[in-house]
Image (cartoon, rainbow, N blue to C red; front, side, top):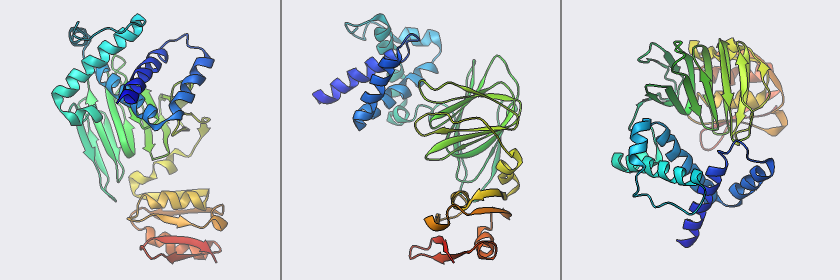
Amino acid sequence: MTHACNVRDEAAHWFSRNRDPEQSAEERCRFEAWLQADALHREEYRLLEQMWSAADLIPEQRLRALCTAEVRPLPVASRRRFLQGALAAAASVVLAGGATYLFDPFSLRGDTFVTQLGERHQVTLADGSTLDLNGRTRVTVLYGDDRRLVRIDAGEAMFSVTPDKSRPFVVEAGPGRVTVTGTRFNVRHDAQEMRVAVESGQVLVAGGQGAASRPLMAGDGVRVGADGSIGPVQRIDVQAVTAWRQGKLIFNDVPLAEVAAEVSRYRERPLRVAPEVASLRFSSVFRSDDTNALLTALPRILPVKVRTLSDGSNEIIPF
């Protein structure tokens, strides 16, 4: 218990320091080393981030009212005391809403939309913005007086955002965040990364602490890694990226490993590929609801064959 309490104090210290605009690079490196040293460090810090997000959603007057003298101040800088009070305020709202809210700050404060394998669905929001959801997608929508927030827990969505400069539209997806006022863009959240592709307008993509934000224009795409690092902005084929909206999979000279990963999103079991053929390049167009046709066609296009494994999944191997 003592160890957990110490870690909690250390997490609060680093959470406070990381919000100092004058934080040095050396101190940032010390924080990263602390974060990677123990899974408990990462868990405590993640919980602070979730609770701080909850506090950020509470109206300022309400937050100040909740930050009362009941919270015992710590003998540290005033920034740390405010952090403790704000987190305590968030926690009071969290606990009032139930334990589920504690681990999922938006679950009781917004609308959640879920699609299953092979299902696509369009959602029209209160301001007229629309979300086109790909299969196996889960999003939570929360609208407030000063911002519009959508969190993608998993999956992919195409956004058409109604302009409103007074209320930025924010999309959170794993390690990254996209902020816009009005535009059309696609966001995909996989276990390892977030991908953003812009069809029209402009967006700002942010990653983890210390990563510089990237502005994206129409035709741009970028990836945010699981560690919050932002890759280079690249020109992409937006039509190919968003072809899922028409039920299509478009591959244009991409490695077979990437083809297998994409096709797996539309199958009950993952499609595997042997390392010997993973780098072979592939170009074609298929229906996303008939990936078996792709498996049938592959041996006619490339020197490979497809075998069925004992668990019912398939693997692409050398011919």
